[in-house]
Length: 158
Image 1 (spheres, rainbow, N blue to C red):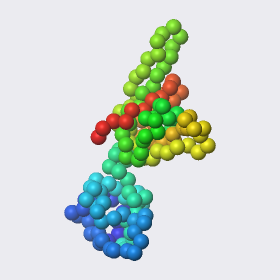
Image 2: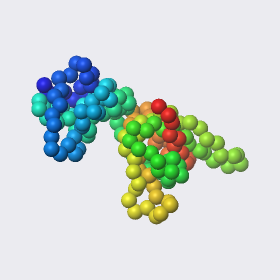
Image 3: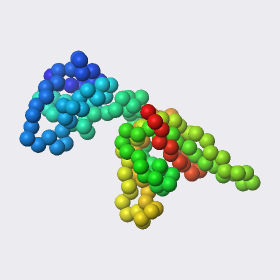
Image 4: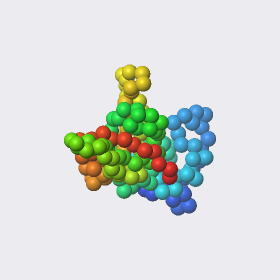
């Protein structure tokens, strides 16, 4: 049956049909279905249309549906070892004249929507481009921190 945008995946209550195709590249495999509980559709899906990974939004995105771009040096972004689905804590270090640098936690458990190396980087000094899931309050905190001092990310366990 057709599925509406924002439809929450409750596999027991959805009518999904699994089909075998010659080339499943780019399609969501049947083995991934059990892991979709709580995920939502980012676009409507007509009856019979394939379920593509690009149409899905992680549960973490329900409360933080917007996306903020952030580009950081590798050594400030877990040496670039971040990937979509990771959670990060964001710290800012501020230097005040006559005082030692002070770091503080700005936000905890930010969902990484995507991560990759910025094009044109010099070996060893590439920047890491990130898209982070945010709401209005979190976006304001991250943007404020960006102008306040140096940002560092810490990947945290789920």
